[in-house]
Length: 119
Image (cartoon, rainbow, N blue to C red; front, side, top):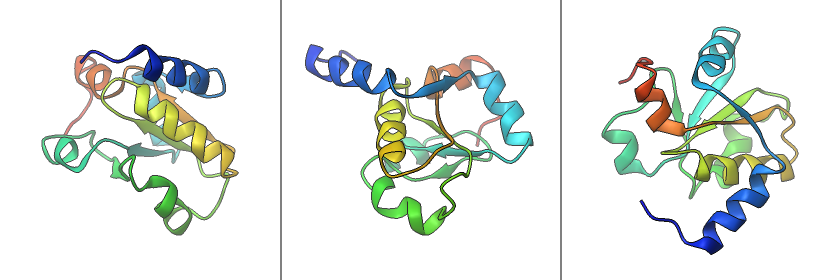
């Protein structure tokens, strides 16, 4: 997918404030209780997703996150298709007071490339 310069600028700004983790780090952190959150669209989720992930799409995550994970120190690792939307979402959750939020570098593409478990 080709992204506009404007979109990439916004993502780069968000990434300057967001911490990233690799697929391998994500898998290890999940063993210790980290929550993997898929922020992709419903149709993307339905066509396949990371095993163990929960779905809170980019369009609703800010609305629904507090009801699902009220503890602001819950470790949340977000992923999307390639790491852009997850960075934007992580940035917003940090603005909402979440203190242990990460974006998974490379997103769904990196997950599949690593042969990590999928559903």
